[in-house]
Image (cartoon, rainbow, N blue to C red; front, side, top):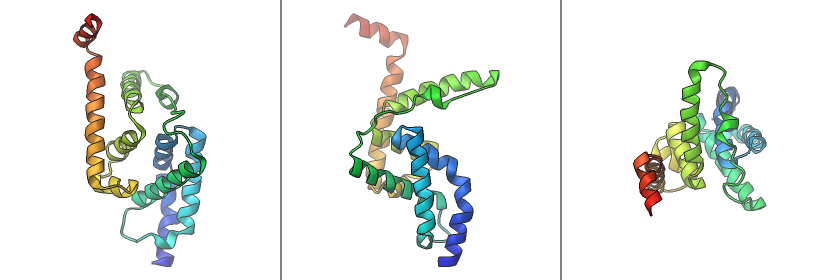
Length: 177
């Protein structure tokens, strides 16, 4: 496991950097902090490459490391959860006319997702953006699978409420009260 695992980890890190950075951004809400999390994740992954089991998914292992580092930082620095999340406008940049509508829609979705509590936002990201199964997300976040299901149900309900609030009939109803 040792020598082969180290090669797998060192060779595979590069292809996961963007996804790790996005996950770091979701957790920290800060571009610089996301970069620091990715760097710390890479260092820890290389240091502990012998713990990686060949034949398993490297991305899940790296997400777990990043998640652990973030939780440790939260504990040690007592960072307030959810503060300073990067706005969708800063993240989404499109240079083609055909991408404008897609970017507007994506910005609206990201804005609504950003309004979710941190644990729901993180769960939505892992399952819907990164494509992890409920079980993989549960292992990454070190919570029971039922917690993942509950968080996703709550997030869907919250996002559904926001969508209903934006419809013209709901706006009129809300104005009468």
